[in-house]
Image (cartoon, rainbow, N blue to C red; front, side):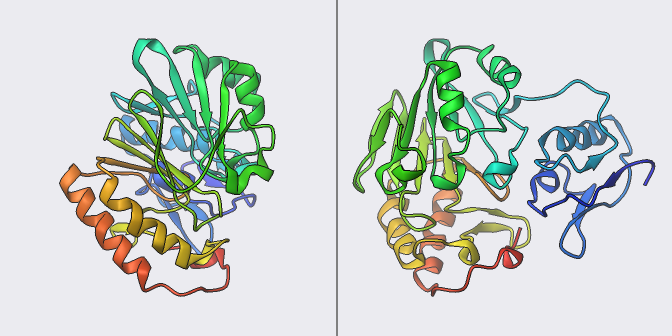
Length: 285
């Protein structure tokens, strides 16, 4: 369509559709270009999808500059360059006081990309949300000279982590940054809360464009949906945030009060969930 297409490597991970939902849609279990861009803003979003897609399936290849890391607002950046080794998970850069930054989960590994992310200031910590996103953690941490974090429940996925989160209680791990253990999706899943504004939820919950609400990916809970329900019940009252920034699924910004209301409702819905077979096709992106 006007030269644009999605090739047959598409894994239906939703990354490109998050960035250009009115230009790229899901058709028969994969992404397709719905129409060509009409203006400069739509062209920019389509090219952002090019550089994020983990299978590099959005064509033609961009002749424009790589936009990543790309600001979502004044306080957090999207890394882009999603990796096929993390099932195409999103990753983020969180600037901190005094010019440093933290990386939450990781993009595909590249020394050139690592230099680009570090150009904005020293990256002091690489925070893994769970085992599925651990593939490149050590390489990025070593390149940055940063500490690598993971919860003990998923420690076998990053046995050389520099910091191990233990137990179920929230722990402050940096100025304005608290980790909340959230077993469920995996035994060692966590979320990171920054500045009472940003909630990096890993694969525990996400914003669904289909339902227009926060959702748990019930069909890909590897450890225990009952544990996830207990985790949410224990945790949502402690969260105050405006942004939900997941590994998979869409991002969303709401007022802190509205986000709290929706998190409470999500915990109640998850309490009624029952175990089900793993089925990637059942995700409500």
